[in-house]
View (cartoon, rainbow, N blue to C red):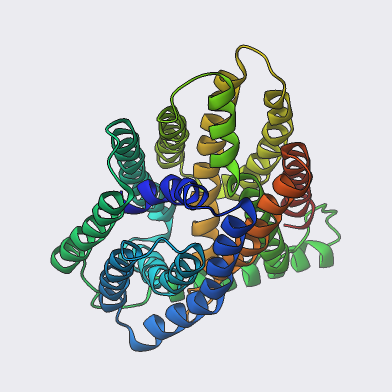
Length: 388
């Protein structure tokens, strides 16, 4: 809830205190670049110590303290620095969370479990956006808004201290890797026996292409970050041109979050391991098409805000399907001790895109943002489709 509110409030607040789109991009990209080695470190250390709860608690408590420090300054450069530091500690809860889900549930339940978790937290994100709408509509000051974000993170710390528990045994990911190795060996022997017996076969013996998975994930994250980092400003401009209240901006992102919740629900209902890879590719091409359609919203016509809202809802739904499938695949493909690699890959694309997106919007126009994102989503589709 706290970061749902902060995600839209902070870019608009930066503009309000004299910041620019370039500074927003710098803030986001710096934070994501710093989170890359942090994610790898937190993933390594939690698997090394076999302790996960302590890093989740540390993440939420440190984020609470830094959000409080936000209220003590209106200097844009200092806010950028604080946000970058917060990203290092905030990401500490991600690898332990992923490992906890993987170890507390069997492989056949991973997609359903990740879908439930992500959907549940997306509800919190949506409530945070609704709080942002209420804060904007009631003209509550920025200091009180940031204090609200800090309090919500403190509540997250307390709830985690009560409800999160470390598993007694860590073995599920190891079992999955053993099963994959045995299955691969069995298929190899089966195909060899058919060939030696002179039986024609068109089957191919292939392992999953981990490199393709990593490249596709980086490209998808890059395109997403290029598109969504300057999106609050684009939506704000569209709402202003339509003569609507700025509080509508939060409602539009509430609907985007609602689309994601629907996507998580569908992912949980249709969690089938065999569909994971093809679903990932399909989501990438859908996102490519939707990004290019956004160009139409740049034209001044009566329903451009409605069209942009509908596209953002569909993008939220598509992202939910993508993140559930890729999280499950990452727990299967990435070995123990590198649990933070998923966040590292997401962070590499996100860090680059969070600067490129605002730069393209500021130096050229949002048309370049949408075209660039659409083409990179297409490259991600081709990577998942042709190489996995």
